[in-house]
Amino acid sequence: MLVFTHAECDGHVTPPGHPERVERLRAVEAGLEGLAVERRDCPPGDEAEVLRCHPAGYLARVKLAVPAEGWAQLDGDTFLAPGSHRAAMRAVGGICAAVDAVVAGEAGAAFVAARPPGHHAETAQAMGFCLYGTVAIGAKRALDHHGLARVAVVDFDVHHGNGTQDLLWDEARCLFASSHQRPLFPGTGAPEERGAHGQVLNLPLRAGSDGAAMRAAYERVILPALADWRPDLVLVSAGFDAHAADPLAGLAWQAEDFRWLAAGLWEAAGGRMVSALEGGYDLDALAASVAAYVGEMTRLSA
Ligand SMILES: [Zn+2]
Image 1 (cartoon, helix red, strand yellow):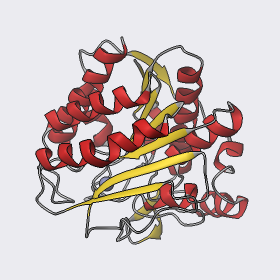
Image 2 (cartoon, rainbow, N blue to C red; image 1 turned 60 degrees about the vertical axis):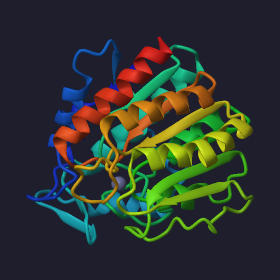
Image 3 (spheres, rainbow, N blue to C red; image 1 turned 30 degrees about the vertical axis):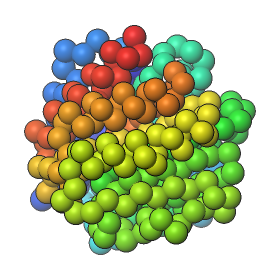
Image 4 (cartoon, rainbow, N blue to C red; image 1 turned 180 degrees about the horizontal axis):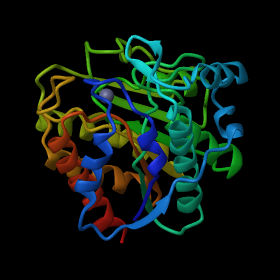
């Protein structure tokens, strides 16, 4: 089990009171404590990888907006600090290095503990704390650089991965399957949203629904779809904000539910799986959930 992270991710400092904060990575570290994982640094991301998903004008706009001090605001809740672009590029570099390592057989599973998150970033629009579509960029790396025939992205963050869906809408080689609370930010993720090739699968969950409801829904819909897809690699948008203690949403999962998800997804992944941190805003719940999820993945991929 590989874990990719980088100190430059702490350069993405958000304004006081913002839930997507530097301390989240300290909570992730607390969750990883004692696990037998191999640590690697996220290399700096290559802009060419970003350009597989976002137009050059968008990348230029984000870089230009980076402030010399303080913050610049890109939307209602997405801020740039002086180190934000560098941090986001470490997230991009981390996912690409994780994909490379897993495709090369250096490990069966990898977890990218970087921030800012990525799954709300649309083609030319920063949104919901996200700048670049990290996991979609990883999927494109697997398809276009490594030449894999089929990949899948599973997004179990409590919010719909509207950005990933947007970036992969036309990508016939990639299944995108998302479970999320609905209605909730960002408002997308209806079952009728199926992608240009019917390869998008949205599974809304009702507010208040618990881990048992999640497990039933995954067993009924997402895990069979994943098995049918026979992906050469599974990427996971691993957001831990469906935890009952999370302040931004209203599902009622527990840390053990993330352990169950790790096992179910691992079985469907056929031995190659790359997960990347998305949400998770209660620090204790985040630490416990990461411990359960990465711990199970470490055990299974050993
Ligand atoms: Zn989220």
